[in-house]
Image 1 (cartoon, rainbow, N blue to C red):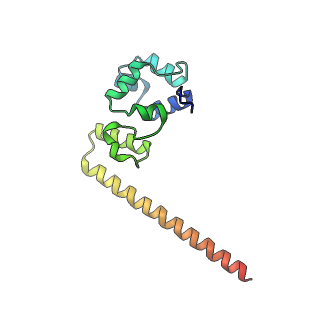
Image 2: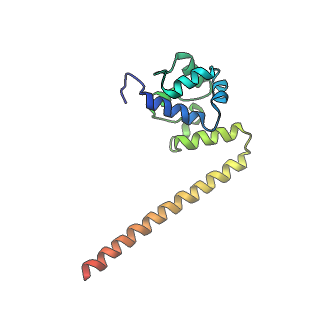
Image 3: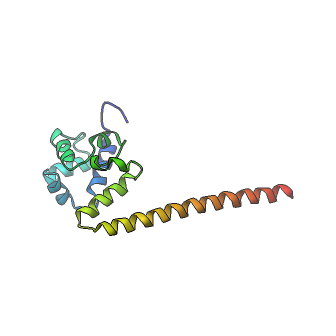
Length: 140
């Protein structure tokens, strides 16, 4: 991506990520923007974000550096969550906004940790199996 200009596909992609499963109308209301303007952004008719959109995003806690570059946490207030993928940050933020209980979020994070551990174990087993297969094949 050019440092001088936010690429349209990156801009639209990040807007879609923030939009989540909201309708365009709901997303427009959330950002205090007109639905027509949001549609223009999402369809690429407006090639770059207007200042007032950036201001509304910042008011919602969106990290403008992330929005422009794709680097860093999605939300300013979750700066400690740099290792959490953008999609997960947005999901967690929307769950909190929808009234999810802290226990629900802890359960989800616990399940995520279990899945990450399982993924690592599966990868290690695959590497060991592949190495074993190569050793057996080289003995023949």
